[in-house]
Length: 137
Image 1 (cartoon, rainbow, N blue to C red):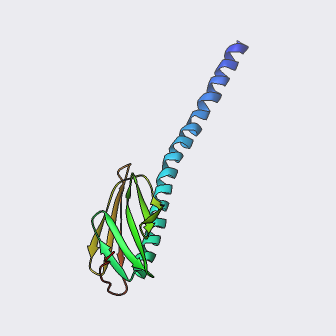
Image 2: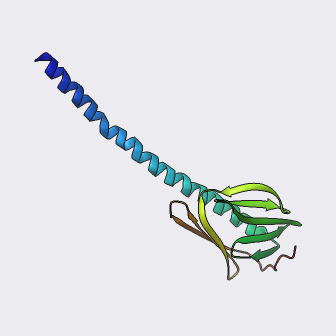
Image 3: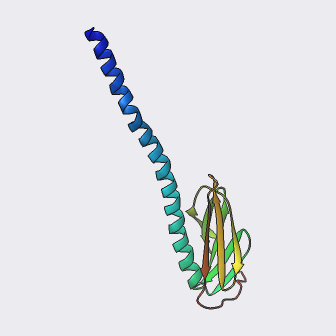
């Protein structure tokens, strides 16, 4: 009889910990989404700063070329990431785990659209404070 009560107590103890384990697993998924969103927000603020300080700007569907203080800044796709290059050299990853992204010219600025590997869409519209011409490398 005592063994049966101990067995039931042990079973109830294990069963009561199951919801805690599920909560930890589900919180990880939420944390991953929050990290991806935070990564996009940081990228957005960086791209806004650079576009607004550009003297010249050329927008292509898969590339963004800017001239800032005599240097050419290029944003382009690299594997599943977007990278930044200065004077066509270097390799700085700006944002990772993208399945696609595009740049589009809008009135007085640029729109950046991206989709991550999980299918979440992101976009940011950046308006310049003054008109710029195209970059001629």
